[in-house]
Length: 343
Image: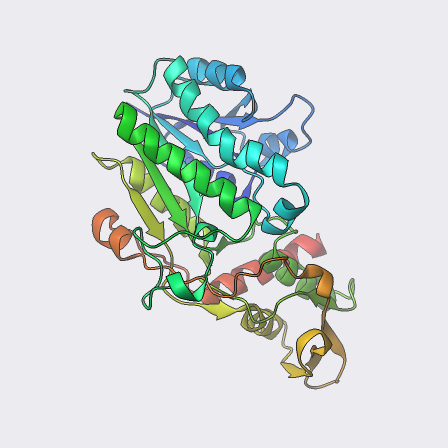
């Protein structure tokens, strides 16, 4: 007998990858879209015709309760959030309402619908909860027991969502698992995120549509994996008999600068760097043309310099392991954007 899944954030990167995975596994899928006139509704209809759309909102408990009653899901994946770290500084109140309190609303909706014993719940937590400060940075990377110290309104809101999910699991014996995912990227990533901004700009430069690329902190190090691999980890969490929390990561870090170098390499350009700080530029080694500039407006008020995850528990308990390595991720994204921009 096939299972049923309810997914918030269905229009986002992870939602799309997860929907593809669940469809392959024969699930009946319901996806929550906020508002009847949401332009992203068309994205679901065109790219995921197997998804049944339900109109609901993370800040409206009654609509979530109706969604649960209508879909009667075996599994509920909460992927929705105000997910851009930089934007969370501009609108911290909305970030708190959606990314933080929205988790509570989902959990209360499960209880109000009387499904706390029949619906397994996945909460999308994040490595941004750790903050990357020296004092709480384990040598082997952050694991499930590492100390949290979020450095953005987004990280703080996610931490509330993480702890309220933990509290409901312990208080009501609900099957709730939190995936503490480190940076995961891919071809469905929004253009506002740095990795997709890079891959898309490189494609546009190759096609003569753009002159150069502007970025912020080039020295930030991230543990980057492929989103298509990470949604499999989400699914595996809800197949376990007992709920728990798991870090999904690669155990490797690379700088934004390295990502830029590999992306330009995919179009046959070697980038060489000159200067430092906001005066640093990246040039085409052959022509000398400046292709990368630093824009101080893209720096965050509180920078997270390094995030490294330890996925040992997920690998051992879930049997999960990433399949796409870092160069493969960059290649996949640039190739996608070359086709995207050429179409």
